[in-house]
Length: 321
Image 1 (cartoon, rainbow, N blue to C red):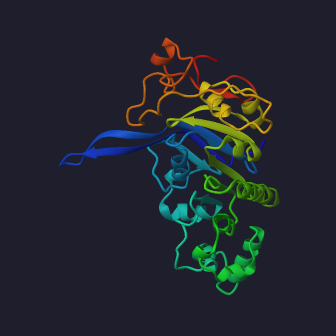
Image 2: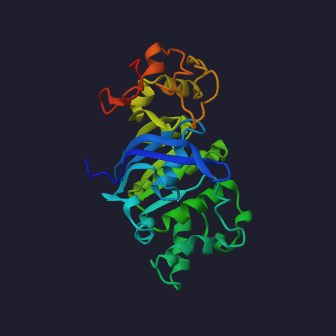
Image 3: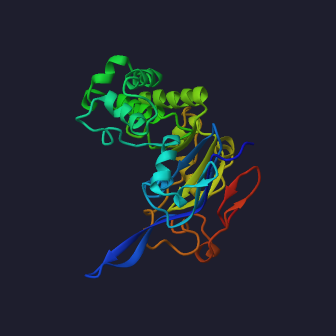
């Protein structure tokens, strides 16, 4: 296998909670609490979990929209958080982020052609005379017409705006795209179109994706490997077929049991988790999932499970496995 494109080792991202007249730090929100991920060229890695599990914070930390607390993030062997912002700016075209809500990331007063083309001009990747043709080319690649170039964001549907968000990332010719819940706000039929677009662009351009989602049915169709996060920590990582065919962690099993079955006659045992996800400010001792796990034992409440390889590049953090 080729050298990893992205390597994340023991990443922690904490946000301080400050109180009092002196604005002292009294606690931390442990949004990401010691995770490791490796992504190779042309690969799609899915990151799944409930809302509040820290998935989006991982993506924002990678591109340095958020500072890490500990750990390393290496892109093509270079530690991104050891670089100056000027050096990071040179790497940014190769590492792009697609947001969950494309409308909020678009300037409502800026025409789509200008919104897509401003980045390549800002990075000096093309000239002002060539940018319009380049924008039309990338719009066509994303399933939009050339006449859309002079329209404003409010003139598009949700699916079209997401295509525009993909075009903004694609025009910089990146090697890795971090897609943060890119289809969660779309209708099912439009979701399928966007997923097919992601797949086609990957085949044509050799892109790698970090695909962040809470919908396992979507992840199953697009991802090669999948990591499951719970309360800032990785609880299980495996290939798509291994994870769906042989889930080991109770949390993964619960998530999979909620995926709709295409054939009604095929019944799947539904695992309903009790209670809410604990606060990342004060996570439970031992296994973080033990407060909701139907099979928790005493050891789960006392000891943090090791994240270990149980075979076939299948990693899990659970005392019961």
